[in-house]
Amino acid sequence: MMKFLCVFLLSLVLCVVPSTLRAQLDPLFYKHTCPPLHSAVHQVLHHVSKGPAKDKRLFASLIRLHFHDCFVQGCDASILLNDTAAIKCEQLALPTINSIRRLDVVNLIKKKIEKICPGVVSCVDILALATEMSSEMSKGPNWQVSLGRRDSITTNFDLATSNIPGQTSNLPQLISKFEKKGFDVNDLVALSGAHIIDQVRCVLSDLPNCTNDGSLGKNIANLDPITPTTFDNNY
Ligand code: HEM
Image (cartoon, rainbow, N blue to C red; front, side, top):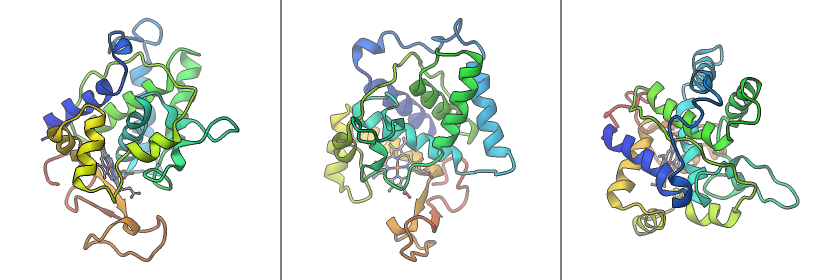
């Protein structure tokens, strides 16, 4: 299952970028322009996950952030753009609102990278790299993520609302939403394996280990009650 998910996480990134860009993507894209990129991203993730605050949910939240970015208008970091007069923030779309976490960590990584290699690395590549490392650092699969994407200067709130699956999507809707992105049912099942390190707000769930007190985000439960932070086959 883990190998499948690895391949499909990779294809999540590949399928949702236009083919004209795809040819230019390369794991070594920043080899000459920002050699310390990988170690810098790794250092921040290590520090935040093991540091004083010890956020065990960090890796799951970053993986989901990347998924919610890619399913709108391709992987382009549009999910990071805030509300302005011209832009409607995708974070406020129904499948995403109140549930996206650790944007602050993406900012931390971006600040660190900007100090080392100013104006070189895109935010979307930081998200892609952080996602790959999140899988690896939670003992899941690793792969050489291709880099070289460009950041968007636009969002699409309507697509963020309609394209991203939510807890109320039924099976035909899930199949159709994934089909629109070029994924079949096998891909849907494999990608859903990311919930192996998932935590869900009880307000959305009727899990037996959940106490739903009606609060919008205080009570959370593990989908995998045995090894909730390890990317394994126990789910
Ligand atoms: C198949 C359709 C999917 C549905 C209906 C769905 C739905 C959800 C829901 C309702 C939550 C809980 C959100 C909350 O508590 O506020 C969640 C969490 C999560 N989802 Fe999905 N999801 C889907 C696919 C995916 C995919 C494809 C990935 C990544 C490849 C993914 C990764 C995650 C992760 C890692 C979490 C936990 C986030 C955290 O703990 O912060 N999901 N998902």
